Length: 169
Image (cartoon, rainbow, N blue to C red; front, side, top):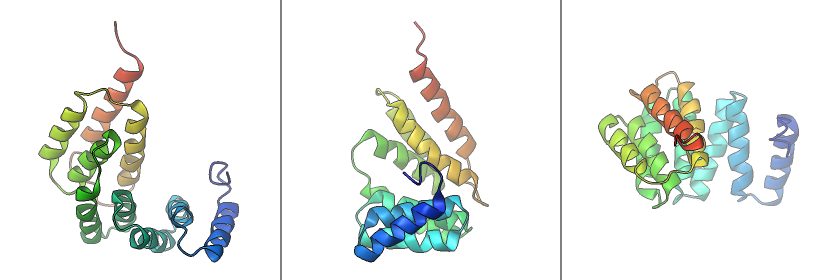
């Protein structure tokens, strides 16, 4: 609740207390990392996202979050390595396919990223899933080095979301 209310200091204290009780509590580390990233305290965010990736090595999302934090610190080599680790870990779900398209783009394969996005758009896409991917796009837009085609990718996602939410007869 503290996170939703943007009472970050209270949220940090609560998550740190939870970690004292259970040092493997991924949810707490993930949220701490996201809070610190929001507060632009990237060193703290990095250590928490590294812990999540260590605790959940088979989770694509633990690696994408870590990669985003590296990218915010302009450590693009490390970001690319973590995104390369994430790609084969994505499952066969719509949200994962959308994220896979985004992280294919971040690795410099713009053509494949847009082809994958076009394939996904041939199905019934959930606008909420588009919103989740757009959150990662927002983080990437804050990075010193942004992937080629990111703005076009974001525009395509946003346009599809509008089409889905406001269908024409």
